[in-house]
Length: 447
Image 1 (tube, rainbow, N blue to C red):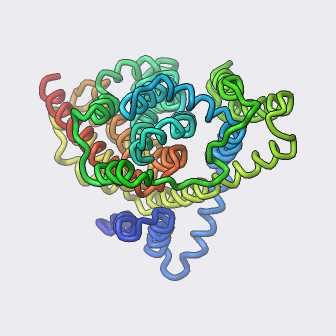
Image 2 (cartoon, one colour; image 1 turned 180 degrees about the vertical axis):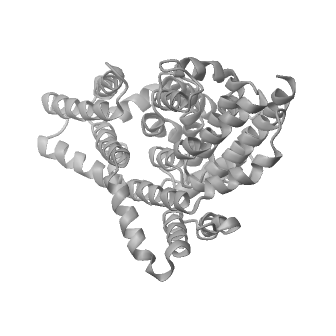
Image 3 (tube, rainbow, N blue to C red; image 1 turned 135 degrees about the horizontal axis):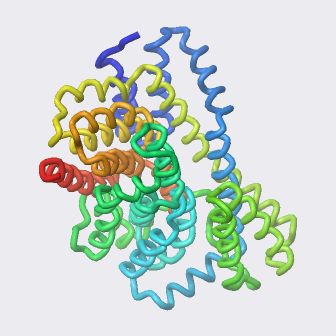
């Protein structure tokens, strides 16, 4: 059934409800229900049940659930074992204040580029005990973390994003088999949004770009009242331990990173080995009794339930939007206006809007590529530029959307509400998007 412009209704419901209620999970669920109501009327519950079951049985969903749940256990072990406290105390002795602590967070975010999940959860959990000491709002910490998570992964070919998109380029025939990475690398100079998003962070930290709107209010609140905007499970609250030393913090992370990278990038394998190693290390070093170690693992799993609920609701919402044809409708609506000069900027703006409103980044790009690449070839537009525009749009959606997985996990890692993180970072994400759109317009004319 062709719903026409009505396909926009579920997404509008989500955005309006989220802004009005400040509750993202419930808003996404309502949006999915509205989409299924449009398709099946009052018998929508059958399709809702079927799609939810399909999502839960999907291999990608299972991977996300396992990774996030085990990351909850891993981070809980780090903070309860006292390793995060020791590391935070060491950094605090060497850092001079809020700006230096946030710059250190930014550098750490750029160093952990293998996967945005790994980045969002690890950096936030590691640095919050440091930034807390300088009265930094958790919203500011979440912004710095999120702005180096997905954007950084887009710029590194060996990241999970690089591998995925290289495969899509080959699948769509714009790169020969085995040459997807080469085209991905050629498009990196044209990934204007992630480049601007990363560069913008130190400018905000140093005050060159001023604090505005909700972020300014959050920082004033933190500095004047001491209310940092903390919202996290007690299992992830940093604690001290008499037996803890730097090895309690660094060894588990090194093991996790090594087994994530070698022999191929696999975050699930890395976090599994990381948890097992940490349990054995803590037991041998007598950081805490074995029963407490195991209880901490369980509490860490429980702490991720809100995040997992949000991600599962998001996946169902994405499937609902795909079923009613939202992405296809928007692309078809703007296709007649595309020319060789305008194609890059129109692709970026269109896919950025769709990715932002749906909370889907990888899925939207997979749908858009079969339409965008033939257009680019027919109009003889620079292919790396087109690839850069599409992937930049995906990065913006992941970074800016109120309910995307990157936003949810960055808020979880930093220990603040998802909505608070989303509204405080949105002005800066829009700055980056505006600058990127201008660059794509100029590049489309010049190249």
